Figure 1: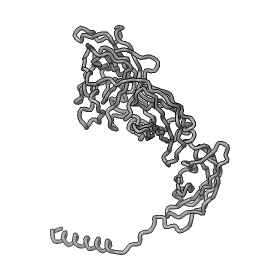
Figure 2 (figure 1 turned 180 degrees about the vertical axis):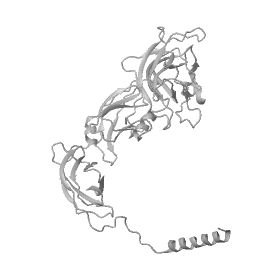
Figure 3 (figure 1 turned 60 degrees about the horizontal axis):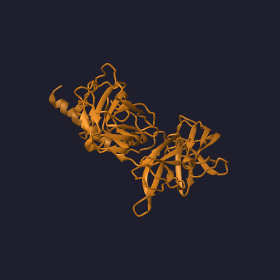
Figure 4 (figure 1 turned 90 degrees about the vertical axis):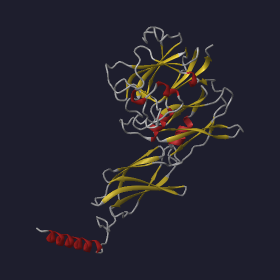
Length: 416
């Protein structure tokens, strides 16, 4: 085939393609059905906190796409959908409800086909149990803690809720000081940053539909006095047996620079490496730069990115050890079990969602941003030196990488 023949064929093909491209086509749904699907048949209604679980039999229509339930509250219509692969639909987000079943909502359940044609609605009534915001609200209990207040809560529905804590500003006006997001069945959290003078706290609960509880006013309380240790006094130490902290551009001193970073932001923290080694725990040591501090709290933050949150070499199980007697790095044998060191606490880095590595929820990220915290409520330790000992990371070895640490104390004695 010569060049002229090829050219003619190419031009002919272009003409054909252009002809069809310019032709008029009517775009219609793939299924093309103009008939409304049949109704669903309700077989069971289970009232739950703030909603209901509706079970039904599907219509036999071959082009059925999904089933939808809808209700209107306070002028807002909310829709909940379930695909044709299931016969169960969950309705939630209702602001009223009662365990005595005296609150009633009207719900419509509709079948929808692939042409977006609705069936005749099936009307039903549900009696939701007390909504999660109210269940959690009535469970709130407060107690004084170091630098603030600790709030205990119950959330048996494991609903996604936010607990907002309010206190007064310098003018005595209440404002929203902090908000704690959770879907855990129960738990506790603390709001800190206050001196040891009497203070009033308030709290309320809201959900993702912006349903809000009343506001509870707690009894006035006095936070327990504590002070954050001055990180400008911290000093690097390397004892015999300590792991390197400088792998992948890390530095020990970066963990007390006051910033929790992702690993692409520079000066992000320390890293002991990726080699599995013999499986023995990795240890790092530093000097608090004081004669002694009665430690009240310890916090550690992972490297602040999705690669390291509950993953990679981030510590999952680790220990914090302390020592008060003076160390000579040149002669100390680095033995953590020689009697001069005391294990202050064991910490587990807990992922709220429990999802596999690589999957993160907003609640997971929020928990990581808050950091691991251990509060020395039962026993405090007067120490000068700190060792962090990693026994297992999220990659199932003993290396560790993290971004920042902070410590607080109720009493601090400075060096002469």
